[in-house]
Amino acid sequence: NKYKVGKFMKIGIDLDGVIFDTEKTFRVYSELYDMLELKQNSKENNYELKLQDRFNWSEEQINDFFNKYCRKIMKETSFMPGAKEVLKMLKKDGHSLIIITARGGFDKEVINITHDRLKKANMDIFDKYFFEAKDKAKICQDEGVFVMIDDSLNICKSVSNEKIHSIYLKDAPSSETKDSLYLKTLYNWGEIYRYLNENKKASDN
Image (tube, rainbow, N blue to C red; front, side, top):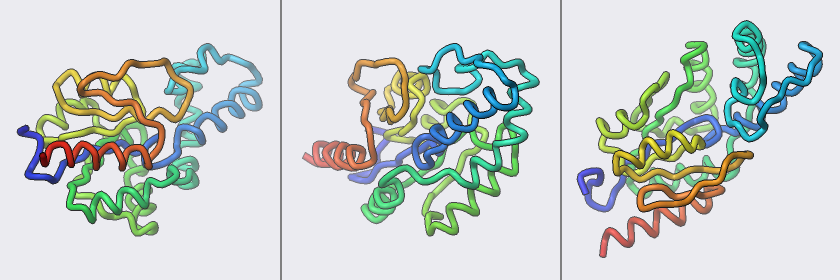
């Protein structure tokens, strides 16, 4: 498999909803913004991952929300349970960890906030960073990524369509999906660590 180097893997990792519990924090503040500031109930589909799709907001309202809350959310949102521990174990096991995230597309200061938070948490352990990523499947191809971990089903499908393994980390209301050879649905970092170790053992045999 050209996406592997011996028994070690290149692992692509999203930030929001994967390392940081950002999506839950966005859900809280988007509800409050809609109710208290816009004084309306404009939610259309709670199963959509992005708030732009959950609410019937104008472009101006979306930009206003991000201007008011984006940096605040990035600074205060917690790490996903087990993310720090498992990522450090994966690094110790010899795998390459590559951040591939859309962060920074709206506000480039978020990139500095991210590096600062990771450093303070002793989590500056990543081999490469790709911010403002618009085509994660292509980045995975170019970097020889073996498996991509993301909380977006659409992104996981686009990656798996290129015959690159993807882990759909499902931690919020969303549509159901069927697993395939290159797409696996998991629910927490403990399951991710078990799955990656089983995959490595199978490839070693």
